[in-house]
Length: 202
Ligand code: GTP
Ligand code: MG
Image (cartoon, rainbow, N blue to C red):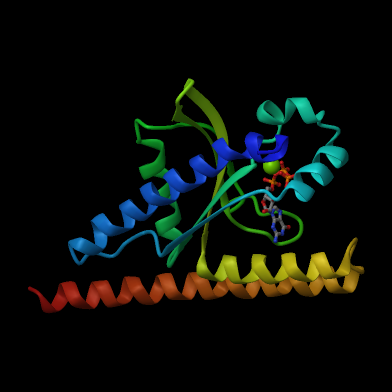
């Protein structure tokens, strides 16, 4: 194997293991016919080209990646409701097989672009034949609506390759507000349905 592949192999292991564990959370809820706070899970190891570009942009020396680039292993958890996000955050924070070392709440503090999500940086120990190795990973937790917005905004940004004109930025922010309203409305609808069900069950 060449140098990059050897460097990235342990990160592949982090992503594989964390995907299984997060999907395991979902299964425990659906097995009991309960609402799962996790709708689906995806994961990726950052492509080599993106690692190189980011290290150049952020001035991170290539031999310091392990310490300074904390999103080489990335997991994404998508939820139905905003409330689910906090439940997932608490479930992850209460685990004994990883340590949350940083959280970034872009829900109550959305980014200027209109981006909303909850980010956790974790330290995850993997067992190698050479012993235990702790690696960082980034978990992004967001609703389907936030994921819809972020996925398309990211692909537009990529195609545009640079700064959007101010007019486009404004429209993207408005689109993000629309996604936000959709989330709020779905939560309200769910709440009203639950209240109605409680009335009937008495
Ligand atoms: P990075 O260099 O991206 O790691 O910046 P950072 O260390 O300040 O982290 P931040 O929490 O801002 O963003 C980490 C990740 O969140 C990014 O790699 C994206 O996946 C996602 N993200 C952040 N801002 C945006 C945004 O405006 N649009 C989209 N689509 N994704 C975003
Ligand atoms: Mg980051």
